[in-house]
Length: 181
Image 1 (tube, one colour):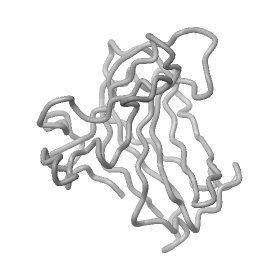
Image 2 (cartoon, helix red, strand yellow):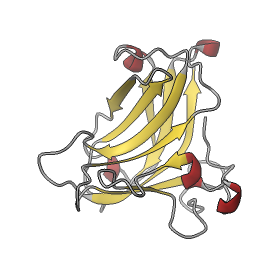
Image 3 (cartoon, one colour):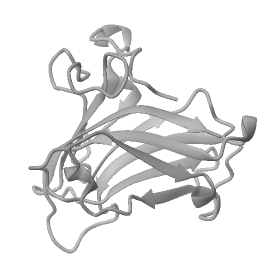
Image 4 (cartoon, helix red, strand yellow):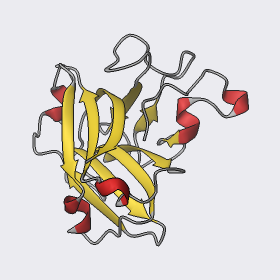
């Protein structure tokens, strides 16, 4: 689905990471920044596989932002029932000094319906080594998503829809997002 290897620093050609993973730039309630502000946009040292990963900076501590997420509209694969796939796998790595914020993934289908799964470790954003997050696709189906036409995937930190108190900030790296049998 995305191993982050195809992104370049050529933003004029639409090849920058943040041009596919739409973040919170210009959206007051979304404190995310996908990729670095200046080239190289992708992380090239802290990687799980290949030569690049996506740094996702989150800031839920200031202003109106209660959540931080980056969203990618999918080209392929959109039918998550093909080839008997049963799980979405996301590799991520946090930092020990990150604020503990809920880590979540949301998938949406073409009708606009969405379903969110939150990581079961409240300190996931603080996890130092690369961690494999296996999400059974049944978790999305149970929340009403038709997996034959998945339109978007969003990765985020915080509480979407508002929080009772301000959250925190940090950086989490993502790599090797894929569907598995």
